[in-house]
Image 1 (cartoon, rainbow, N blue to C red):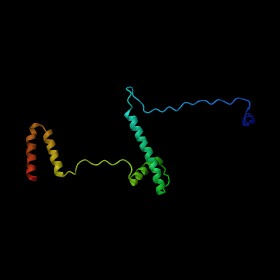
Image 2: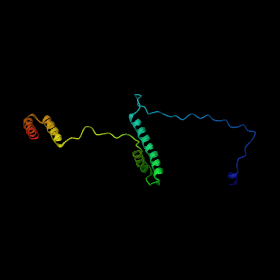
Image 3: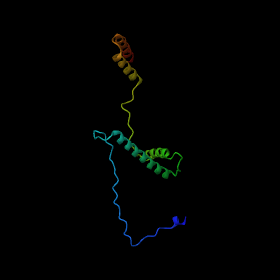
Length: 140
């Protein structure tokens, strides 16, 4: 057993071992399909992963700013805190605004009836047009 504990003797007269050149790590840009175009799914996956890492970093900043301790579900907690950090500091993607102005209930009913007139069978269109004209007379 003592033979395993002994250090091997180094021969000073022996030539030094040559340095083995190491190949550079291979970094692939994006997986390609047979037609040579990068996969949009792979690109979207990378963007999503970058976003998650960004939120995690911002979650750590949020914890340090607010003096919080680590939670049990660490990554999920950091992502949520990263979103809070973005809200507090005005970072992150701008929210999409809703299209158009608010619509009144009368406009919704009118649009529904106009659509019904276009979709209805010709036999029912005359009756629907009478209904629309009656509502127009009532509203106007």
